[in-house]
Image (cartoon, rainbow, N blue to C red):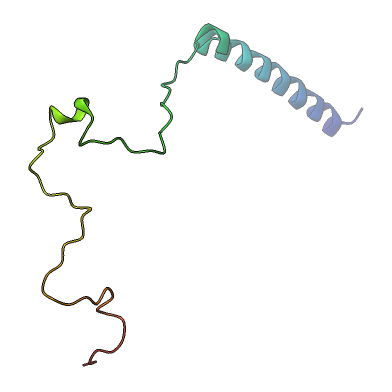
Length: 92
């Protein structure tokens, strides 16, 4: 055998022994996945419907019944134009 081939065999042998030692040491330090189970929080499914907060007793205890409803249409002035910014106006 040549000196170069003999050096390659020694390098491969040392690398294999280092790999085996690192696997054993890491197993001793970190353990196995079965020895440390992980518990993750579970999120409840979101309902696609909204509750009727005006008539549901669970919401009346903390919601103000006299508050304004932001979903109601509020008309200011006498204009019936539903899209005031769509054309027909003066451009500057």
